[in-house]
Image 1 (cartoon, helix red, strand yellow):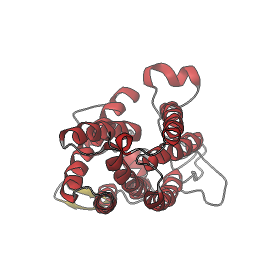
Image 2 (image 1 turned 135 degrees about the horizontal axis):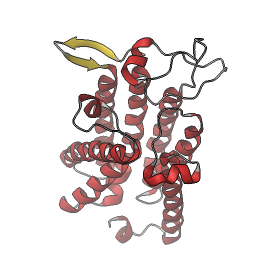
Image 3 (image 1 turned 180 degrees about the vertical axis):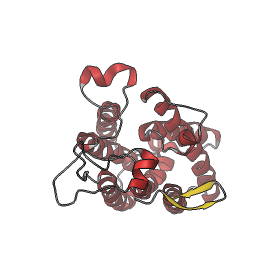
Image 4 (image 1 turned 180 degrees about the horizontal axis):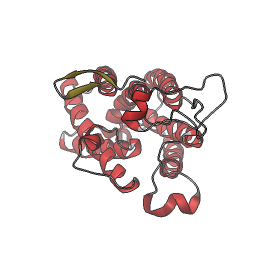
Length: 269
């Protein structure tokens, strides 16, 4: 709930940025370790990590532009905002698809190395969201409801008081996702050593995260956007619609890979 740590002149050093940077560094370390376990060169993992990050940032901003109303592109707020996660996931995924072909690396092995690291990065990133006050939840009377500071309200617009002036307590959706993704990271890290085929870790993440994200959207209350009017039409958020597609595709891929067995010719595609 402290959006800024300090300022250097007029430049703010944000809590979100620090959490994100720490998460990215740890994610790269984890990805390089898991990649080495599968025989991938560490230097290529670091190269892939950098370009995947850039692709993810671009993707998150692009989807944010299409989903949210009145987005001002050439502003500091647009640059420092986190964007839309699924846009970042798609952007990063496309970067990996291109680069593994460019570097002549096995796609499924690379994906399995990066996905646990991605979950760890999410765990840290959502801590940054909580500190900034973005991605907030609906009001709640439960004991774990969170009342955000005025600094958070000024920074992100998170509501702090109700219509009658009473303090507003919200679902800590950021912390729920952060701790959930830390557990998911532990599971995926464990699964990586025990996977039955290359790609199993990626597909497992797709199933787990899409189900979780679909569920937590019901208690999210920040502006959700409306991609091509689909939210108005279906009553589901953009992230829920994407989650349904990701879950369906992941389940189909899981069934296909399990039926195909573990031939190396398939795993190396």
